[in-house]
Length: 54
Image (cartoon, rainbow, N blue to C red):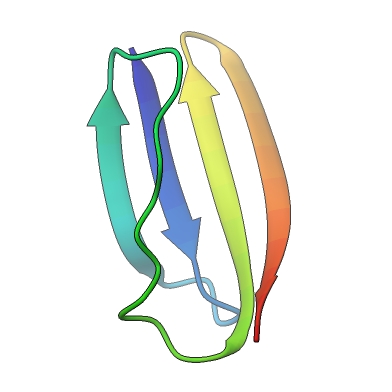
């Protein structure tokens, strides 16, 4: 199971999603332009990705 969290530039969680699928999509349409960080956790593995929304 994947746990996905999207944080804004202030560190606040703006989206949280869990899935068992190997592939998923995130709807960020409701978020204003800016820099976001997507944190993906599966078991003990964690990765973080920076996204810029224009």
